[in-house]
Image 1: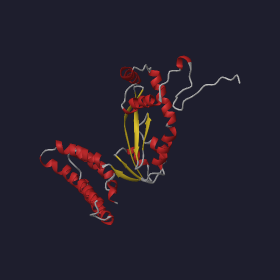
Image 2: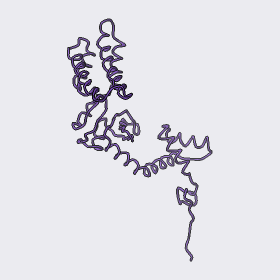
Image 3: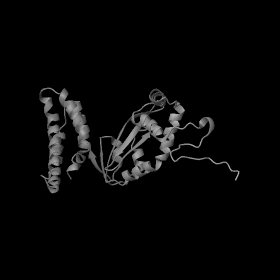
Image 4: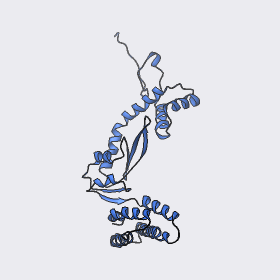
Amino acid sequence: CGRRVQGRHPLQTSDALGAAASQIGPDAQAAVVTLNKTFGLSHIKVAAVFHALFGITLTRGASAQIVLRAADRLGPAYHEVQEEIKSSPCVTPDETGWRVAGRSAWLHAWVAERATGYAIDPHRKADVLERLIGLDWSGTMVHDGFASYDRFKAATHQQCLGHVLRRVRELEAKATRGAVHYPRKLIALFTEAIHLRNRHQKGEVSAAWLRRARKGFDKRLSDLVRPAREVPAYETLSAHLRKHWDEWFTFLS
């Protein structure tokens, strides 16, 4: 027929010919992505690993292009994760410092029951989460005391007890004499609530009992943090506890 034809194997990653015909196969490309994204190797280090272990010559540019192509292929899966988080009844957001080309940024993470999503943004604000789930999202949000999450007025908030317990234990470790009583009372109150929740999960306590118990825990916390504290760090902590006084024992109801 006079036409030019070219065969293709299902696992080929490119139709390139000539000098570009050397193929980096799908397993090798997956290894590039894993080394860069899971283990944090730079593209030049990924290339060095391939040369040292496999004798494969790989440039930094090739490593970067492989990662970008993988991102394009995983785009639909990423959107599925976003939709799963948006429809989840409970989401735990958090953020941590990040770098993009040497500049400061933030890695935002959102954990739901069936999915965990990530986004990188120049700002720490909850704007990224707002764009994903909207301000009218009405599920339960578990988070630290970062004020940016307070904008979700329709959500039910649960302040992270892990964060506040670490903070209180640090204060207890520095306290002397009578100053140890306040942090110890807070630790006892929060751990008592956690143990009660654990008993419920074992079937020893009913959900109705938990809901009734929550009122008592709210009252005890309110009484504990209401008096002004002479230690500045204690008063700062008390102000934080008072500000969110109805968000510490949400998990009991």
